[in-house]
Image (cartoon, rainbow, N blue to C red):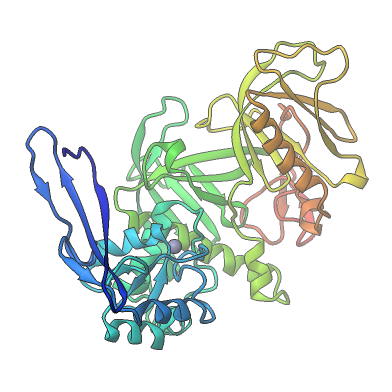
Length: 461
Ligand SMILES: [Zn+2]
């Protein structure tokens, strides 16, 4: 038999004796390269039992089942995914399949095994029972800063990798007095940034300043004036490995002249990129704390950067709805639906605000009567108090998914921040809006930028 990829074979032999039926398992993984016939066996920590025969102890399985029923053990210790299938017999945590793969990269501190079809020594089961996810959380997460992003199972792989390494390998969250680089008041370094016009990634110097509450970047080493200065409290940052084409790719979005501006960045070192991400979150949190001193910390974190609700291609037509449909990249960010000619465009071509249902917003399948669709036939009509917008999707599944997200947003009640962040509808205004000197912010900006936190004064030109 020739294997061309990693193959797991479980052979079960049942031996019936006059006393009882016992099951003997032979578990092994083998990797054979077809052209050479070379065989590689994974170490025991990857594949418990290796390729040797193990006999199941009848008392082990009930113990592991009871451990899974302990509070906190029903989800992955690192990403919260339900139904963990792996355990670390050195850290005492239960893990999902995805996070178990990351633990394989820190084998010297985390020896993992599948919970089923694997031999667990009594001492290992007892260790897991005595620890578990709740105890490990108290030990390894006792000093996680409130702004630090704890990844969920749908988050980018780089976030989960660095979270697991920060927790167990670097032990960043065990000592509250230990200061990390993302907690410094001034952070400076080089990141690869995609050129706005030519699409080339070039090294750029970035400076994050807590005192100013800004993230700046410079095109030349000796530049005194930054190319762009972004107020940290309006930044949204999300890891976008597929879109950027790099596993550590980070998209930073902010409003510039009332239009959404995107920066696409990466750094070859995943830790550096995730530390930048959390450093921006740290400064953003402190500025929100200044702006809303009475708000609980947990509430402030809900106002911080967030994942996009949905992204993907749809076709759109113009305001008269007689123009030809054009394929565009759409991003739904909270209540803002932006569209771009290309997913990596620096500026959104237009934006649409989705308010709540009783204020005249709706989304429904189909096109207005008599309206011909373009290349794609699955239509969506979004209605606002000002006008209707017509989009088409490539498939019915895509249409239903967009509609589900639109209606979820429209059926929810707008927060005061939603009212304050309401942007002009598509298309984006071509004329520059009035700039204001804000009593809170260091930079002039349009009135919608800081959610009406403090009174603003129009700038005299
Ligand atoms: Zn997990």
